[in-house]
Image (tube, rainbow, N blue to C red):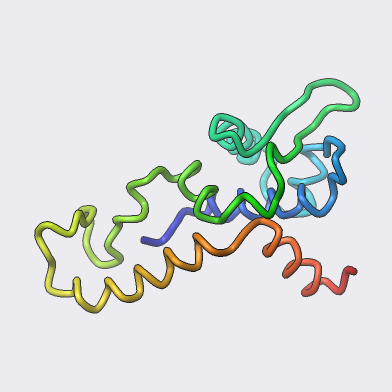
Amino acid sequence: MIYSKTAKYAVLALAEVSARSHGDYVSTQEIADVAAIPYPHFAKTIAQLKRAGLLVTSRGKAGGILLAKPAEEITILDVVLAIDGPGTLNDCPLFLKSCDCTRLCSLHGLWREAHDAVVSFLTSTTIADVAAARAGALGVS
């Protein structure tokens, strides 16, 4: 269960929207630039996040993107599921097939504990947490 680079980009983008929007729409180009996301890739990601109910979009000069709900209510897991789908939680890091826990592989016991810890982290960490951590790392108050 290692999520995609697109999901990582999406988490960073939502954190930047959270930090910059203050209730107003933020330019998609600005977010892509600040989060170091290739813009064409980000444009596709926006559509997925919008379909998942995590972003609101608006066209026009004052348009852009805005979080659909408070950053404290959006978990990293919400973003990963929106981008990669629910199957990503069952990916085994060593085998090609997804694990449904009915036929256990030889490493299931070892991986399960790590899997559960990662899911716990994804579930308990919000976009607000990521935004705060990024601001702290960048020395922004």
